[in-house]
Length: 67
Image (cartoon, rainbow, N blue to C red):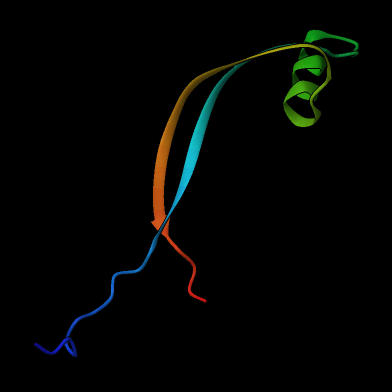
């Protein structure tokens, strides 16, 4: 039996997606709350506490890169 008309299937590459819940305490030095919120959104602030909890993992499959 000939296999000339068979197309090979690309290898899949297994990766994982990790989902985290992150709770942070961030300090902003500003003249008022409006400026503080703007600075937080645009530049961030000083993180003094960070709690991280893994909530989910999922296996993802994608095509491997051609060599």
